[in-house]
Amino acid sequence: MTLDSFNLKGSHYGFSGCRITDLGASEYTLVTIAADASPSIGPFRADIERCIAAIVRACRQSPRADNLMLRVTAFDDRLHEVHGFKPLAECPTAAYDGCLPQGGGTALCDGAANGAQALVDYGKQLRDASFGVNGLLFVITDGEDNSSRRKAPDVKGALDSVIRGETLESLTSVLVGVNVRDPKMASYLADFQAAAGFGRYVELDRADADTLARLADFVGRSVCAQSLALGTGRASLSLSF
Image (cartoon, rainbow, N blue to C red; front, side):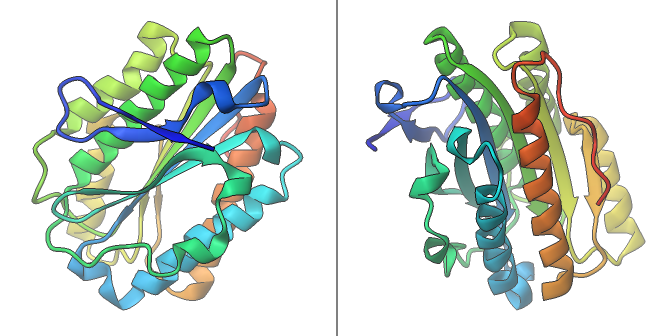
């Protein structure tokens, strides 16, 4: 499918997504994974890439796999779009091997704000074209923001706009802290969750293969549950990690 480029009002970064006239289903669950690519994730960068591939494999087991669209981004001191919104069938798992750049800094707010704004904007376009649509946003990070132009209230404003503007039927947002062992960092990320308006914070004290496999399973189950909730007018119930 052809991916079109879209600008976001008030943002330096935009996004891409499948041309709406090319879509074949009548409803979609939009999924965005925004992954930290700062230098500190270097020791487990490949594990996070394998985690993203495992999420795709898990989502393919969903009875609603044909109604899922995925966008993957990365952020270091700037934002990188690995790929825009496209059907799961067009997301080969091998494509995520080496997908995260090796940059400097952590633009956590920019990555999260773009992820939320793009979900809302593309979701509104789908709603305006008479598609049923809901969404999920997962932001994976191990550190504190030090490079963003945007702030936590910008993330919250985008997430809150789902309620104000009815752009999506529902949106589930999860902040995931990986390799969080420092109590100060744990406190920072918990505070960021509240300030940015994320519905949930999941904290992992490790970033090894087993832990990230559990994360992939959790994300896959969450995507399946949210997709099954589409048409009910509410978000899926929170799942245990």
